Amino acid sequence: MSRLKAIKMTVSGMVQGVGFRYTAKMLADRLNVNGIIRNLMNGDVYIEAQADNETLKKFVAGIKDSPSPAARVDQVETSEIPVNDYQDFSVVY
Image 1 (spheres, rainbow, N blue to C red):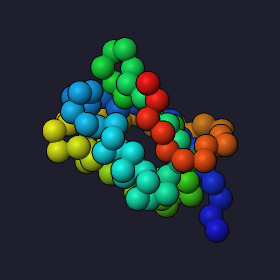
Image 2: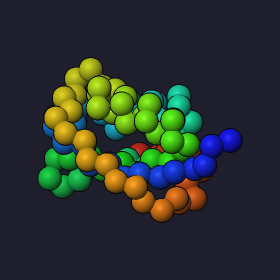
Image 3: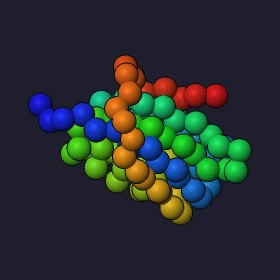
Image 4: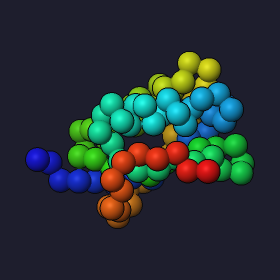
């Protein structure tokens, strides 16, 4: 199995109030990505995701394409972070 990797992402655009977090969770569950997703006060969405490198590439590509048809992703900033002990992918309030 490939080495586990973790990233954090900040997603900008029309990503709040349009089902973005829930469709992102569905994408993560389908790809077996663990982590968290939450809204930020400035209208962006914050994601921490961990999986093997190839799976993370698919997840990031899916986020950039917007898993929610009502959302619009303008920008995605990613950076690597230390691996956490996430057991699933959770929407955090």
